[in-house]
Image (cartoon, rainbow, N blue to C red; front, top):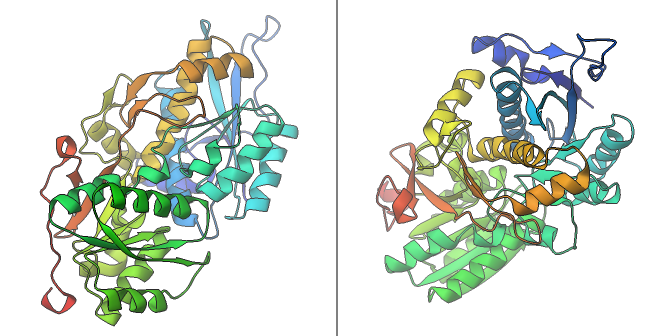
Length: 420
């Protein structure tokens, strides 16, 4: 298990990356600085924030993006912004992080440790709906606020929790922009495969709902277990019904399996819509030209027209992130930075650090950030933010929907594998 506790810059596990980007190494503290006092004028005010995020396990890729997104905010808020302003006092932020190993039981245990032993003031979420479900149950038990950006399943917000807030668009809306666009292009049918866990289930339920809304016939729906290693059986079954659209609901590794199986079986839907993977440049690195024409829902892209007074435009945020980490941000990274920013803005609006005051400020929040609008509904979901869609075109990930955010036209239908 990896334990990371840092104040000021970055994440201990990623010192090498920080060094490569020309940013000085972080200050590592095993004990939080004491609060400022008249007896010790050199001490500083500190807000301690905790998070359990995957460094190893199934979600290690996305976990890395999440940790780096938090680290981008941490460096900015402490060293450029001057710390969080609480009723005129500036507080430095200490971020305490553990590796949850992609395991729901581990994340629950670590969140309890963060609260009971590390005495954190607030929590940021892990990656994935299943881990967020476990983590938020513990935060609710102890009446600790958890703001998150990587658990999109609607089921998270159907439990009556008061302390869970999510900046991202809910999973049920992930495929809306893509399916609407494809229906307008003449697509008539769809098949859906999804992992039998919380987030993909919400994606699939939403896809069926949007398919009906846009007049698309659902020809088949198939589930598969977590950590599946082969989806060939599902793809072979779908090939027989010749759908116009394939929808795959899962995570990064699933996207690779879907694409490779489709090519191997010569399964040729006119469009492939796959969650998580297609918006990540690493997918193109993994499967090369086979990623061409694949469509992916996206929470955020650097080309979108969002802007705030903290990180500037979406493009300026992307440039900052790449300078710090040596690679462009995925939307998981951007939404993680936005998660921490939302917590900061709520603390500042509350002018206090108690749960009730900050919770009220989150409920009243209505802001536009570099990541997009944030306005929480009564359940804690972000009620304001639309979902986008990207397509891999000539090796680039380009926004194709919604229209006001698009930087390229959709390429449809995709040619058969033999013609690419």
